[in-house]
Amino acid sequence: MHEKVIVILAVLFVLMGKAEFTNHTANVKCAELFKCSITNGVSMTCDTLQLITIPKCTENIEKLIIRSGVIERLYNFDFPQALNTLEILAVKNVYLKKIDKMTFENLKNLVDLDLSENFLRTIDPELLINNVHLERLNFSSNMIRKLVANQFPLPNLKTLDLSNCNLELVDETAFLNTTALQWLNLRTNKLRTLSFQVNATAILLNNNPWNCDCYVYWSIKQYTTDENFESSTCMDPERNQLRIWNDTNLSDTICEDEIRQNANKSKKDKNAREDNAPDLIITIYGYVFVALSALICMCCCCDKPKRKVSSCS
Image (tube, rainbow, N blue to C red; front, side, top):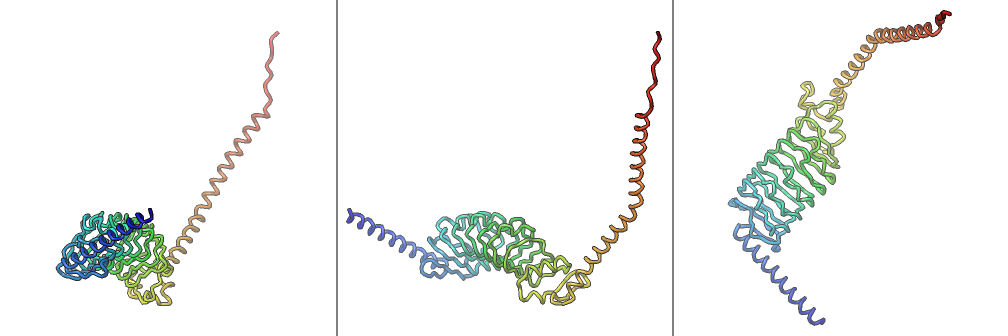
C-alpha cells in the first residue's frame, strides 16, 4: 500500500515538474515573441516601443512590467484567466487613454498596479472592484481632472499616487473606503480647497494653487506631512497671491475676513434682538391683557346672583 502511494506521489511530482517546465518554456517563447525579457520564468519586462498589445501567451506569471509602447486602450479580454497569478502589473508610458470596466476582473491576486505616465482622463469607480488585495496604486502623470464618490473601493490599499494629474475636483467621499490608506500623494495638481475626507497618515499636497482662506489653511495644517509644503504659495484671495505658507502672519491675515464676518454677524444678531425687543414686549403685554380680561369676565359671571323665578299659585 505504501509503495503505491509513493509511486503515485512520484508520478504527480514528475507531472507537476513537467507542467512547470512547460509553462516556463512557454513564457520564454512568449517573451521572445514580444521582444521582452523574462526572469525566473515568472517575471516579464517589456521596454520595446513596438509593443501595441498586452502579451497574453504567458501562464503562471507573477510580475508583468510594460514601460513603453503604444497601447491606447485596455480591453476586457486583455488579462485572461491564465494571468490570474499576477501580483505586480505596470502598464506605464504607453499612451493609454481608456480602460474597459472589467479589464482587471481576473487579477484577483493583484497587489501592485502602476498605470502612470499615460493619458487617462477618468477612472471608473468599478474598475478595481474585484481587486480587493490591491495595496499599491499609481495613477500619477495622467490627465484625471475629477474623482467621484467612492472612487477607490479598496479596503487594503496602503499607498495611492495621484500626483501631476490636473486634479481639480475631489468628491468628499472619494476616499471613503480606503480605510487602510497610509500614504497619499496629491502633489502638483490644480486643487484649490480640501473638501474631502481621508484617513491617510501621510498626505503630500505641495504645488497646488490653494485658495488660502481660513478653513483651507487649518485643514491643510492638520493633514499634510509634506516637508516641502511650507514653501507652497497661495493663489487666492487676491491680497494673498504668491504668499508662502510659512509666512508667520499668514494665518492671522487669511482668517481676518472670517473673524470680521463672524464679529459683524454677531453684532447684527445683537442689534436685531435689540430692535425686536420692544415689539416682543408689546406682544407679551397684549397677550397678558387679553388673558386677564378673559379671567375677570369669567369671575364676574360666576359671582352674579341668579334671578329667582316667581311661581303662580
